[in-house]
Image (cartoon, rainbow, N blue to C red; front, side, top):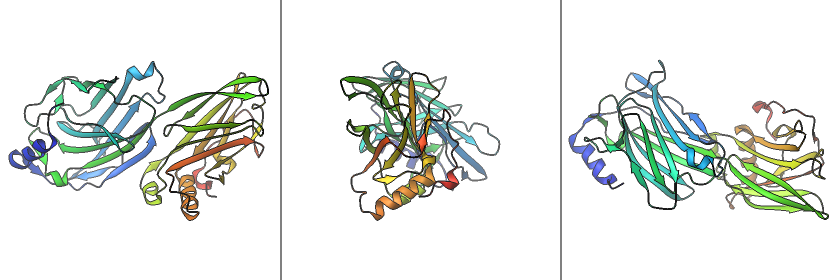
Length: 336
């Protein structure tokens, strides 16, 4: 992975046919796949599809992790060909990976083999700009990337399309920002009385932190990193999903439940319980964009957004009961 970004940009400035697009910056947040909003390139309207897999990270699934990109004409659905993708992958404040890729047919699949060693890319390089490429559009990357659950930021700049020599001026290169999540599985034991009960918490947004259990009131708490900036939330497609499993029989199952986020009680429509499994109850926090905006406004109003955390609390009692079904989400009724 020896190519230098500065050299690539300099090469763009002196050797290319310049294209000037009219493209806005678009993004998503907290999903595992996304079709980003369309943007215009001359007379065409283009969209970018992104997908990260697996949705849940286990030791077996880790070896099959991949990231897909597909730039396509929004009106026809046809792939846009000869695409140069400049990709930066980061998690939190850490940049994990940055490279240029070229796909003759347009779609690109990056297959990751997580390990602790330096990053290695298995492919050939396209001779004009030097982007990594392959005949199939699949490229394997070994190294410490997509090796744990959580929220990943994929910053994608489109350096060129249609012909390998047709490239954009660097300051006008279309940019897409996709925040995609790999579910973090957190197994834990809940000790109550003289018994130990196995429980599992899954965060589909970011990595679980500081899980605690209070046996005196059967209350569980946990946290995950979260940026409470209201403008950022409004600008993104965003959804938060957490779930926790309680074994049957146990003191935790077959209960009614209530939940809070950052000390703010959640409406029952954001809490769901699936009691259809004979071996466990599964309680879901399902918070759509409207609900997250309302939470963020409350958190910012209370001055408690400085921690950079979303803090969950679940306890017995309340109006949510195990009725054996998952309620439908109605985002128009998610305000507090």
